[in-house]
Image (cartoon, rainbow, N blue to C red; front, side, top):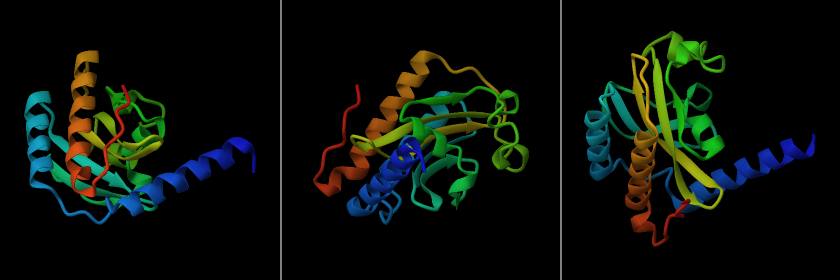
Length: 172
């Protein structure tokens, strides 16, 4: 196993341990975060807005507005890529993107054509999920919209961890 792979495995173990220690994987759906999703869905004009948590094996939908997204294996999650890079990820047209054009969520229901996700940053190096927007039509996404989505992700993190007695990391 090379050094880069070892670091990646260690970082993922650290991320999952932080998620479990904080209890975020067991937390119930929040009405306030669901309302944030509805606001984002309307504001950005997308079919779905969701807050997801990625544990070791699955993606759990903590809140959503719009089309039904369901919990899924982590291997079927677009948000997995967002937490890996720990910054806003935008895929304007999934069918034209070489990494995503054959993804299960693109070629089968819900037929995602647009994805934008902002990481939910809990502590330095610990992105536990994503505030994501999906649509069935491709679209452009401005730098200003990226900043708005990142701000919504920070608000969601603040709400989700407020009962934990810990402060989320500000990354800017």
